[in-house]
Length: 291
Length: 291
Image (cartoon, rainbow over all chains, first blue to last red; front, side, top):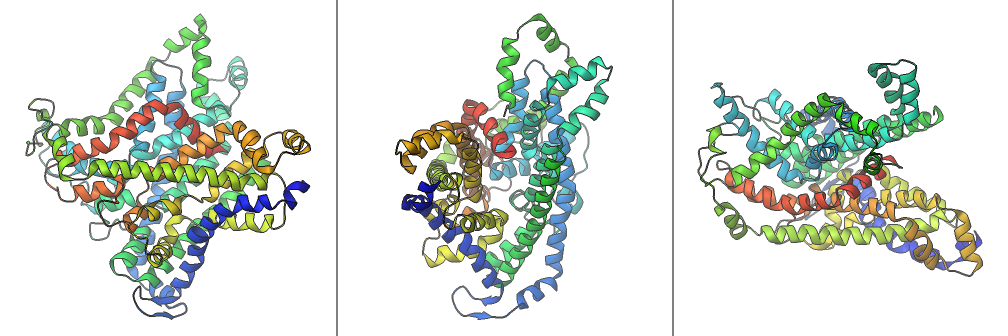
């Protein structure tokens, strides 16, 4: 369209977005890389040190521990959250009384602030006086269970909290996917004598393939970025057992003022997410070609 | 696309007997859903109960929650001890301004791209695509440096500006504009309609679902944003809810009553909004997720 090509109005329309975008998104991407190559003192000297920050990072066992925690959380949370979201969607897709209510209930925690969620669950799972503790007490379990301060149970708690908080999001995506499967497919299958399990296996699950690819990858990326609920509930403890990569970045940059190593760790996070994004693009294009 | 809410009216209007009997035929699903909904709601019910208990109540005793005494003392104290009302206002202000500007700037930016190529369009699209690949969590340090150099740390600008020019918004709207019939724009162009008028008089009115979805997505993202406000704000007057709540709660480790009252207070506005706009919110989520 000629008019668009010639019109200076086109560029005027792009300008406000690009000014903000370049300054607050694009420039920081470049700047972050430069900082990662510097010995960056926020108030003083900024000297170029090459790859030293990265070398220092890769030699730091707490860095690898935080990467491992992030990967571990991703490996555990992705299947749980995808499957719970899928099952909830199947459940509330069944025509029944209160359907809209159930959908709202399962989704609702998602709109609560991460700080509220963390505060609430800290109180629920806290030792000596939390909800779970008191309930166990009431049924005669006198032994203290340290949900938040035992290194293994802390992860269980975080997974539980994250599931309660965000599974409803995946449910909504799956529900939208379920509406796209034509009802005739189910009717035809029923006439052919397919039972409920066969309809699920041969119609529902294949019909949700595109949504599943989307949900899985959105979830992987979200899980890689886990920070707030862990930080607010366990503080990364006990003894760093739940410190995630973003917490490592945060502590290096904003507690110890090590901007260089923090920026280098940020680029590692970026690389992890970038690889997942590329995989996603490839899988989505192949899923679309495959129908 | 149809979302689950679209299915509701059809299910209701189809009030023939077959539909009605099918509704009644799933008592098992109803029971499972009720049980799950109970577990989903228990944390919130408990929080509300505890928030009305007098400070220093014996929370170890599970039966103590459901029996009097109750008090509104905690709520009064939350409002007098902490600027909770201000935090709610800050969150609201930041979310509204961010959403408005994000919608305006993304719309202006997306439309020219949708009308066809112009000088530099491929390069500019490439720049936007880069931003899509890099998560905001990976550029916290340079963003902090940028705002430090501007002397804008701990300000509304810092809370608002980075959230406006989001690549996702432009891509979502461009995709939607691409789906509008070309003839509309060609006809308008014949009549000598300029690109800005074309956008606001033809494209925008037809793009309400996409704009609503993006608006809800941006608003919720801003309302619940934790990491950047957590890093960039230090004074309680500028804090938003996600940062203010942990700041407030950190001084109450043993007694849950005040923190829980604070959690209820800051969650009420968003819960009311959710109940009012449930349909649009769910629709918006599935729209932004699946497009």
